[in-house]
Length: 237
Image (cartoon, rainbow, N blue to C red; front, side, top):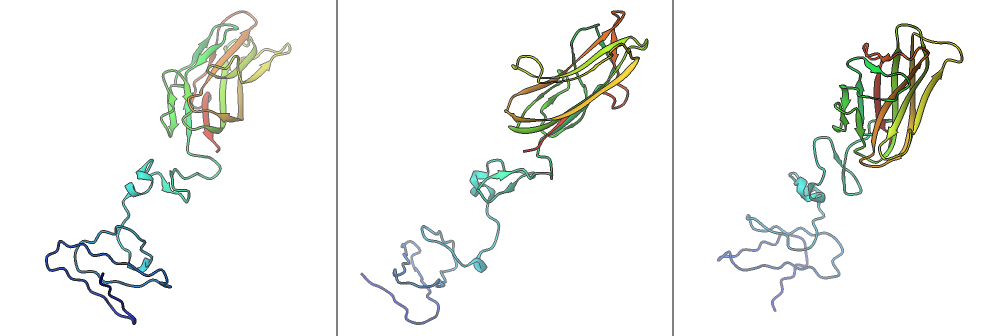
C-alpha cells in the first residue's frame, strides 16, 4: 500500500488521467488541526467526514435539506431545534379570527339561537366558517376569545339577555354573559365579554348562541349595525 505524507505546509494536487479511478484522502488519528486539500477542478462528492472551514463555504443550502423542508414557507423560519415554525407576533400567537354580524338576527322569545357572524374581518388559518358561525381550532393551545352582541326589541320589553359560548361535544355552555332586569326592562342593551380558554385541542369547534326573554312574549333582535355584534379570538401559546 502506497502512502503520501507531507511534513510541511503546502498544497497537494491529485490528478487522474483516466478520470475513472477512486481517490481516498485519509488523515492520521493524530491530526491536531484542520488542513487544506486542493482537489482538481471538477465536481467532487464528499463521501464522509466534515467540512469545518466556514470561510470556504458559499451558496445556499437547499430547503429540502433542513427537516426535508417540512412546513417551510414564506411565513416560517428555521428554529434551533431543527423545525420550521411560524414566528410569534408579540403577545399573540399565529392564529386569529374575527367576524361580525352582517344582518340583524331575529330571536324567538326565550329561545337560544345560533349566531352566524357572516362577514369575516380576519381569518389567518381559514378556521372560521361564515356559513355556520363556527371557529374550528387549527392549533392546540390557549386562546383569548371575545364576543359582543347588541340586543334590541324596539319596545322596551327585554327582561333577560344571555350570550353563550359553546364547544361542540361539550354539554352546555362553557361561558355565559347574562343581564337580568330585576324589574327593569330594556329597549336595547349590549352584552360584551372576553376570556382566556386554556388547552383547546385541534378540531375543537366554538360557536355563539344568543337568548332574550321579553315580558310580552314577542321576538327581539341581535343588531348588526357596524361592529355592534362581533365574535373574535386569538391564540396565546
